[in-house]
Image (cartoon, rainbow, N blue to C red; front, side):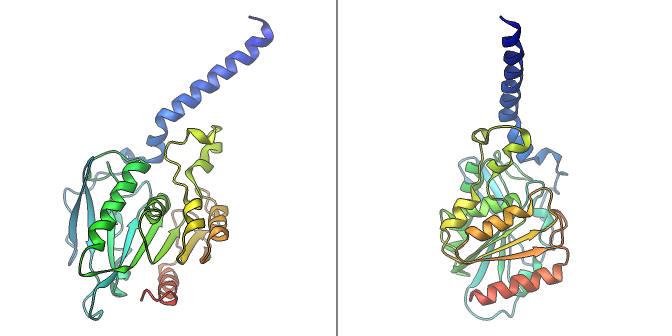
Length: 272
């Protein structure tokens, strides 16, 4: 082996070994469920909360239905199906999302496989199957208006609801601090994009989506840069972009303003 060849051979071997290790460990990076504090053994005591266990081929997945508040009017209620971030659990969100109930909207918090008290392992395939199962259960209920189902995802949850939007009809899509595609982050790790096992190609879904889309993103987001929100907005046929003076985990910076923005979007599109 010549000296010059050695200079090329060993760096290539090291890089290939690095890519192989990254391929094997990427789901632990993308789905850091082991770093999330263990949840309580059961759901909190929230008035009206209905625990729904979804039957999937990889086991039972937990979801929580938060009902609309009484006095919302007759007839079935609109529904928001919510997907949380990769370092979160459904346990984190009932208090933040209770305003939907005040607007007369039910909320379904869907857990990811392998997170919290749920069976299975997280992947794009298992998460998509879970959200489809959740949608199918809820759309068949008489107390839910299947023509007014809104899909709302934060961060990784944007990938979950976009994957669902590609499979089932919905009245609107809300993406908060989400990304164009998981493959876009491969360059951060100096790896080729084709190694990404769970691409969550949100941009393709948004391009094909026929309904209204609300995109909310922090201008100072260093986890998922604001450029992702702008690109999603440019691709959307009926898109609205709201930029906040915030990063990733402090978005929205003002929940009162956030709820005004969400309510305005829902009313403008006849969901309320």
